Length: 463
Image (tube, rainbow, N blue to C red):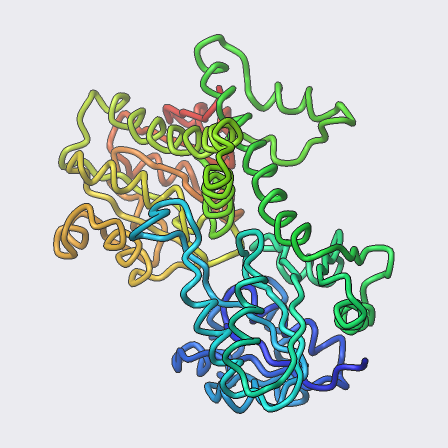
């Protein structure tokens, strides 16, 4: 089966870049990305590619090449679904904030709404592809809705989880470690799998396309993120031990990373992991395990989250302790707000939680991030509901000039590993700060020795 028309529901961090690359690599397939968010679609269609709603290196070039040729962004959801032979579901699946499973289970209301909309408007058979991160056996629920509420059209459900790292999403799409496709092991299911294999096969080597049953594919996504997050929490737990014993966590990480069984990736201690996936997926894994009565399994994975939260709190409390046990009225400069460099995504960013703790201590925070807007930062703090909007705006000032953020500060907290931070005139910064001048490097991005020579008092996690 050769696909000619693809629709993707959801124009976010996964749907937008993924569909842009699929369109670029498959000029014979019409790819339409739909979303009810009018402003987001307008940004995707903006003639100025600098205004795309998502910042990813290289994404502007991909969109610029394919948009208007065979890549389209639209709010006409029903029309795009009806015309498509293959529909990707790439909507948000946040952690539930209410009811049973609150704080752990994935909230599938948007997935269900998608399924009902697909069933309502479809007049022809379709392949439905789960791109959102979902709990195991969600495909069963989607299929039940489609089969029982539709117009007689037949549907095949595939699981095709994304393994993108924000900041390198385009690179990951162009040369993926693997593409995973799960489907029913029936003649119809295998035919659907083959159709999606052919889409990716235009640029991905066949040996890098893995096909499985539906449940293995769904669980593999959660497991991959859980294993990566586990490594981060593991090295972060040791960073605290390094600090009290005189060891250097970077040296420890380098030493164990040379072991071919372990490898060097995700062994850099930091203020903690963030992003839309790690915490959400582990909590999902914990909830699934508990729902099957596997309490020991749930407790094991929950500890990864506990350690990550501890690291963020430890970092913030250390700032307070070092600044003579009070930051009340003191200016603390934040360098970075995004959860990692080369993205404007702030979901679960460590900066949000460090800021929240310091605001409780009545600090005056001035933040700079090259890609994150003031509106986003205030929205992140408001989402926590720790204090009202007016209090957040009083406690946090957002500036567009890093030197303005750093001037007259009592301390600097580096929360994102943006490369530009290394290039600043640190002598000038030191001269214009309160003394003693403290730097708390939560991402091990700065040259500690060079800063200390200037006169800074520098704290780096794990040293």
